[in-house]
Image (cartoon, rainbow, N blue to C red; front, side):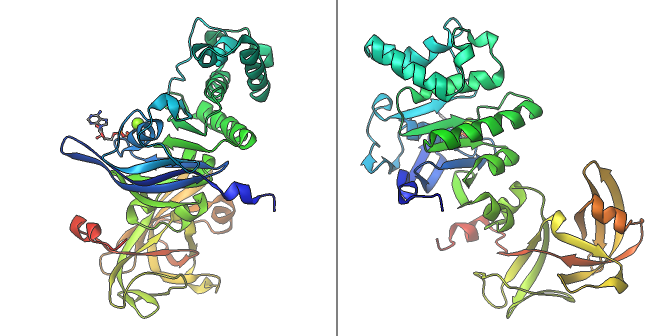
Length: 375
Ligand SMILES: Nc1ncnc2c1ncn2[C@@H]1O[C@H](COP(=O)(O)OP(=O)(O)O)[C@@H](O)[C@H]1O
Ligand SMILES: [Mg+2]
C-alpha cells in the first residue's frame, strides 16, 4: 500500500449546493468531496451546470444554499482572492507579451512578494513542470502542452488548496487532447494537489479521474471510480452517457430478471422490489455471440437472435442482432478481432446471445417518480 492516511483526508467538501438563475434551477443539492491528492472529474453535457459549480468553488458565484469547505474551513462567504483556489480555463489565458517565467510569477508580483521569493518560487515551479529550456520564451513559441504546463505552474504559484480545470482541452483536436490529458494526469499525480477537472468528454473523464461525478441537468447522478460508473451505472442516464448501452424492459421475479422467455439470475445487490418494472442494461462489448449448438457456461444466456448487420469499424466489429422476442428488438454488439476471426458472422445467421456482465436499473419513466426517489 502506498496510500497514507493523509491521502484519505478531505481537501474539498461541497455541501448541499443549490443555485438558480432567475427561475431556472441550475444546480440542485450538489454534494461531493475531494480527497487529498485526488482528481475528481465533473462530467456532464453542455449546460448541465459544470462551470457554475466551478465558479461557486472559486468564489466567482454565490450559491443560493449550501457550503464550500476547503481543508475544514468554510469559505462560502470568502471572496475569490482569499480562497486559495487555482483556476485553469479553456484558453489558458496566458499573457502573450510575457515570458514563461514572467507569466508564472505574475500573481506573486501583483501581491507585492519580495523579488527573491518570486524568483525562488518561479524556479521551483519551472523545474516541477519541466519548463527549464523554455523559461525565456513567449506563449506563442510554445506547444499546446507546454502552454498548459505554464498555466498550471502559474496557478500553483499561489500555493492553492485546490486546482480547478474548466475544459482546458475544449478547443483542441482529438489527437492533441489525448496526449495532453496523459501529460496532465502525470503532472497531477506528481504535484498531488487535489483537483477538480470538468469536461463533457467521457473518454477524458475515464482516463483522468480518480473518481468521476456525473452531472445531469444540475443534479449529481453518480459519483464513483471510472470502473464503477462505467460498469455499474446507477442510472440510465449514466449508462447511456458513458458509452453505448443496450436497454431491455422487464420485471423482477425473486432473484431473476424476466422478459417473455428471458430469465437472468441477478448476482449483484440491487435495490428493487419483487414485481417491479426494471431495465436490463448491458454494454455492446459485454455480449458474446455463439452458434446455438455451441453454448458454454461462462456467461448467462439472454436469448437467441438473428444477425441483421455487420460493420467493420477499425479496431472492432459492430453487429446488430434482432432478439428472438415478440418486439424483435435490435441490440448492438461489438466484437474484437480475436472473436471475429474465430467466429465470422453472416447476415441472417441465427446466434445465441450470452451476457458477460449486465446491470438492473429501476424503470423510472416519469420525472416526478425520479424526483420523489428516496435519496
Ligand atoms: N450568469 C448566468 N445567468 C443566467 N444563466 C446562467 C448563467 N450562468 C450559467 N447560466 C445557465 O446555467 C446553466 C448551466 O450553465 P453552466 O454551468 O455554464 O453549464 P456547463 O458548464 O455544464 O456547460 C445553463 O443553462 C446556462 O445557460
Ligand atoms: Mg462550462
